[in-house]
Length: 273
Length: 265
Image 1 (cartoon, helix red, strand yellow):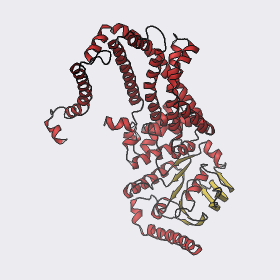
Image 2: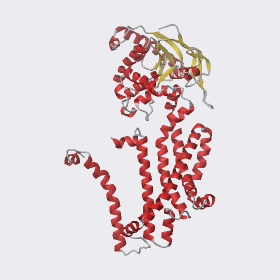
Image 3: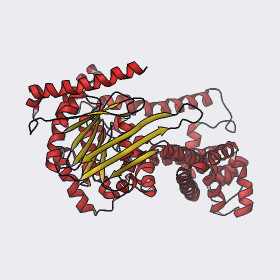
Image 4: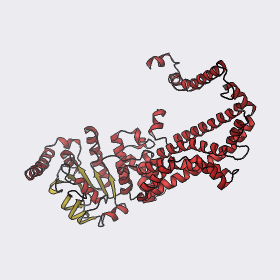
């Protein structure tokens, strides 16, 4: 470690090793994988309907960029609506469980059992209930998928507060509401964010899969399903690529929000040093 | 020091009823009076009920027999009307609040306006000599500094009464002696009544007007030793003959308690 700092430029000794250690591997890994993919597809003459080469997918993406981006907007709206609804629901129920401890064990048990069911299987039912073309049927599936990890993680965080902190609050004559909002909820924030991060990926899955079962003609899931049926696999893969990018961007945004909201937290502090 | 009675315990008892198992008598027939402005230490071996007694005073647990008044009220009324401040063995600061935010919390919970609680919290940080750390977060401070923040927090609401449950127990010797001096200085400037739990004989003697020695199984008051040392109690007091005499007196009383214990067992 001393050696790398010594060889680095004198003005910014910390930047060069940081680049080498964190940025270079993160960029290099996908580049290597794409190059291997390209070489294998070309080298073994793999048919395009089995697996298109990255260059084909790139070309399809470029040619259909406006269509795919417009479709993404529709899908992102459903994803965000589902995520927000699921998080709001999960946090609300978790707060109720922390307030009324006697119901927490039965409710959490039911939550875990329901969470084991494949919730995307509800997508056709939701289309039937709320209308195939409506954003609510897509967001609804996503919201239910988001609800459980947020509930279970947040409830854990709310109940996990130390007896010492509860006694400190009691010694200051805090009301139950103040204990919930000033002690339990801030303590549960890291847990809540874990739930939201799980929920963000689930929410994208929920909406895309719901769209496979039908939806607005210009939604991303509908686009992928249609292209795969035509079959225009390079276009389908381009849609999948954008869907993956959406999930990644959402995850990144939540990570950023977490850092902004919790500068005190150990996971943030250690990397900030 | 006045004659006003702040703590008045009369035949106080506390039995922990471990259902299905043998019940434990933590406190038995405690009679204790603390007057305004006093610094009283509760001293004894572990299991003597000194912390339990303090927690009964603070309404963090309730007695099972007898009577206790805090500021002429029952402990719950005293707690909910914010009559006391409390410092625990661990600082118990909230990680997501700055040092200033932690110190102003009691006033925030009491509904005091922001500008007023800010300036009050700053005064308290000055009192514990941590003004430069107002914007820091607890994890950026050493254990001793965190405990000083906890002391500032307990004092923010200007309570006339301070409960301290082995507040310096987790600190190293040098930090502890430094904070003992600070505590006496704060006690002198705030005229607060302090009930202080400790298992250190020297600490109890150095800080207190009166040392209440407790004995275990069941927890009860064995004897009380008045401490008559010159004021102000500076670090030199620790090497004074009178200090050693009182320490010896307390230690002898404590050993009598422990010997009695062994005789019973």
